[in-house]
Length: 335
Image 1 (cartoon, rainbow, N blue to C red):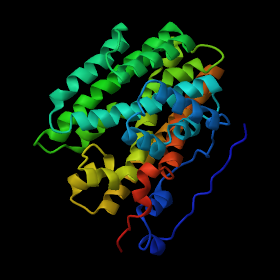
Image 2 (cartoon, rainbow, N blue to C red; image 1 turned 180 degrees about the vertical axis):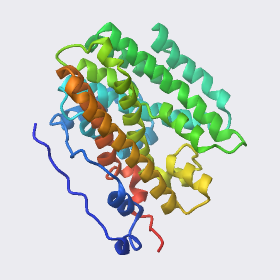
Image 3 (cartoon, helix red, strand yellow; image 1 turned 120 degrees about the vertical axis):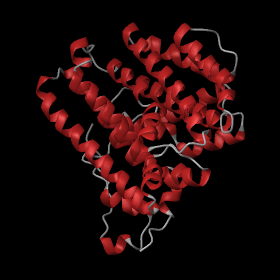
């Protein structure tokens, strides 16, 4: 499928002083990967709506509105442009589920992290032991687990389950950080953010999308594992740039730009610029490692790396247009 390039407008420094936070991000973020989307996006969007409705997750009007504003099928399309329709549907369903799960966890654990325990325990029990669900959210996760097991090898499904459990545990870490009176350092913020990103659970699906299974040596190569970490950080930190205003208004702490603002006691545009610099360094290191290991990769390994690249590129193009982060296009950059 040929790349569909989306031209990102550039700005001079004089123009940026009169522009928006989105202008600042577009002008300074290093994004070497061209825009791509999956041709099955529209069909998968309808599938997501039907799946969420079947499990009663969009019976709540607030949840239904959130799904409209987050466009999970669009994010899946941008992140996974080359996968087949079945894999794309699982990716989109999981993105939608995680959006619902994440918002519910934030609401439940906003003041008392302990209130999250029943919700997280249900999810862990389903993912680890295949326990029967007791809530609609748990029923949706059970069905998602079934979809993964039907498409993936047992080893791939096990990696999906383990990484999904890590994501669930991360939400408890986030709740503790949000409610603790001690200030959250930049290092703690980035550690928690890497857990709550929820990106790594998708990578076993990119294993399953390949015509042959990756070898253990290739999958666990130190360079490949480092690239995994870099790709997750670059993807979720890029989304942080565009969600900064939203998170600041909501009192959020686990956001890369806001962490820099607290640490440096600086303006929001300066904090965003510092975060952009950190993301740019991360993407460049990813590129360097990719160039080093590319000659050694099997076709399956190369396709798996393309899945990582998809999240870096996809989160950027999705974040800059999705209604959930529209505040970034309104917030002005002061001279």
